[in-house]
Length: 295
Image (cartoon, rainbow, N blue to C red; front, top):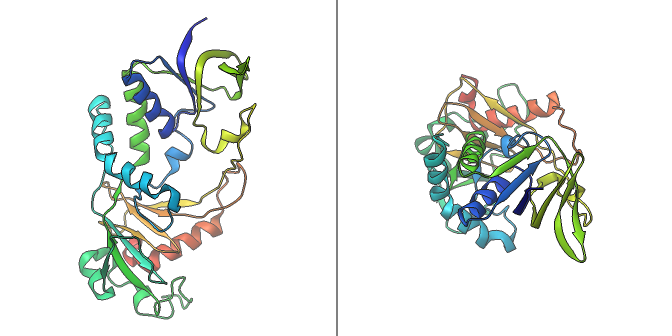
């Protein structure tokens, strides 16, 4: 039976990038994916590369900053090996805050400067009206808002995972899909491989990169649970140059003119069904910041 030096559980961007890195070191690598490679959270992400946000837990901030610093080189390698353009954007992020808290290194800007820095925010009702065009109170409080610019990048996650899959195969990383991992096999206190619902694989090292499903793999079931997030993409409206992020919503532009709007955080298990009312609330919050999204 064929064996590998390392088996990685999960073919999202973390599992794929780990597999590529290990293969560069000469190890034989197998990635086992329960569904289709790169089609879960990695495929649905907004693509913000936040290296120093207040939302990043303090113990992870050094790691986040270093990850953000290394990202251009990582993307360049994937593009070079796959021939796929990943759409890494380096225009930065405009933060809109109701409490004036910004990450270290953020450059404060006046609300009056926003229309010049980001024309897509021109005419925003958030900064000058207590009610929106339909007479509804805004989701943002215009009396308490402040703004700042922070150097951040963004990437198109769908292009990124497509490039990573192609680069992994180019480097002869083996990928097995369509079978859920049931357990890591441990014999005599040592890992010897894993068991899926269909077959078993042998390796002395197994790395769990299963994301929301990481807690479903025995024998050690980690305290991991899925968090659902609603998002939408706006096509055909006035484009944005910068990522725009507030407490209520974020807007992430793509180079093809789309603007990704998100997101909610919901304890909904593995339910992927979209809720129309939630999508409408996100869209309403996006229009408060960038009215031109309606075209």
